[in-house]
Length: 187
Image (cartoon, rainbow, N blue to C red):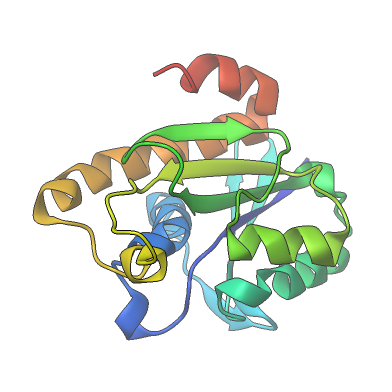
């Protein structure tokens, strides 16, 4: 079985380490743990690896967050994959910092990357791994918050949470969304 694992983020040095780029961090860790490198290809950086009997195509779109759907649609078509074999790793303001939740489908929750994927694919029937980034921001300062760096205290916890997210991606590919939800969402 083959899967497209898409980590959402923005390209460019100025965005590295921001809350909005946590999807990139998760797929980077997945690639690093398998000792594979990303190559720049059409619509993004791509790496390929195997987890037991599953083939994973890792994608970091280079379209910037608000046009992520273009990259996702292209790579689903290029790899001849149905949306049921797509997992999007995304930052989420609505769950506490460090919380990880996998869902087999759902709304975009106001996230522009998910909104564009939904519009481009014409469906919400794709899995997403939501990585809580907290929501400690003043009214009308949401954009500044998601584009800010994690605090030092949060930064110390990120590596462990990213490793947990990698385990959830592996579980999704081997056991499916429901089993992964049952195993990990309550933690």
